[in-house]
Length: 282
Image (cartoon, helix red, strand yellow):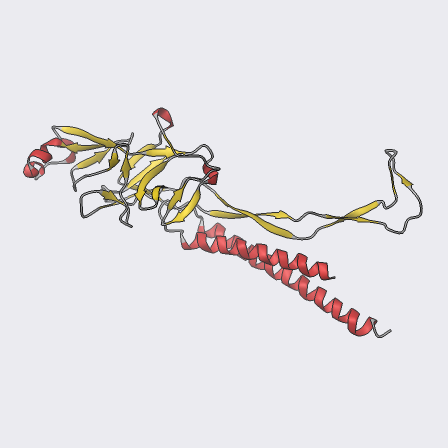
């Protein structure tokens, strides 16, 4: 009976981890570039039940013998194995900002932080006070030659991630007054967005603020080239891949499973109490 307590308790602990993951997914349903987490569980090693009072050797069909033949297995509950991240792409949302960038396909944008290079799918950027393209936390977005220095209404990003500026603006800031973006007469290539991937991207680690870091298991970041590069879309952001309806259904399932494990512990406790208080009297 004591073993039943531990089995039920392990189930409750596993469902608690699953509930925390679902709650975090729901909290980030509107976070651009967020990838949902899924709690993965595994069973503890099963115990083999054997008859311990058999007399002599029991011969099996295959010719082997055993003094204590196995009569079955006993499960001992579950434990959380890992929090697995689903990297399925979210929907692309059009915005009115030239500073928003989305990746259509596999890949990661590079961000410069005080803790080293980090990676994100959240392309909701702003123009920093010093003229650099930055995240909302103030970290510069990296091109292949370093942080990207731009001016408002004076840059365009093509589908390959190349950042173009109007050379006329650099010589005469008034040159663009009253002109449309497609009237650029002297475009100049400034840089190309640094887009990377990993050998095993499932092992990259979340760092908060929609950013990730590489690990020993994921391998170092590799700059993507050629057809492997995703399509870059200016004026778009990638929504989270969380489906709130699905997450709510899973939350109900977790609550029911948690209650079932709780009731099993209460049943075991009542049975043990009856054994001690009533059977022992006999």
